[in-house]
Amino acid sequence: MKGYVIAVAVAAGACLTTRFASPPAGGNTPGPNNHTRRAPECEAIAARSAEKDRLYRRLIAGEVALADAVRRAVALDRDWPEVRPEWYDHCPGRSLGERVAWVIVTMASELPADPGRAAVVERLECEAAALADLGPGWEFAPVNPGGRSAVPVAIVTCE
Image (cartoon, rainbow, N blue to C red; front, top):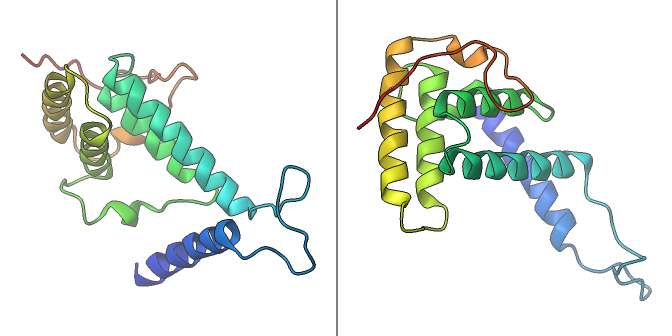
C-alpha cells in the first residue's frame, strides 16, 4: 500500500510539474499555438475526475441511484491509470462498495450548495447505510451506458 501511495504522489507531482513548469528558454512561451502537452497520465486523471464530477451532479439531481454511482466510480477507477481498491481503505465501511459509497456521499455534500442539498445528502446517507447490508461484490456488477446497473442491487426507501 505504501508503494502505491508513493506512486500516486509521484504521478500527481509529475502532473503539477508539467502544468506549472517555467516557460522554456529562448522566448518560446506557452500559448495557443505553442504549448507543452501534459503527460498522458495527467490527461487520463483529469478526464476521470471530470467524469466523476458529472456523475456526482447526476446523483444529486436524482438521475442515478447511489449503488449505480458506486458501480460507475469503481469502473472508472479500474481504467488506466488505475486507482487501486486499497486507496479507499481509510474510509468507513466493510466492503469496497460501501467505502466508495461514503466517499461519494462526502463529495456530493461538498459540492456547491443549493437549497435542497440537505435533503439530498440525507437521501444518499440512507442509501449508503442500506448498501452496507449487501456485503462485498455487488459493486462489480456491470453498468449500462446510461448509468443504470444491468442488475438491480436494492430498492431503498428513505423517508
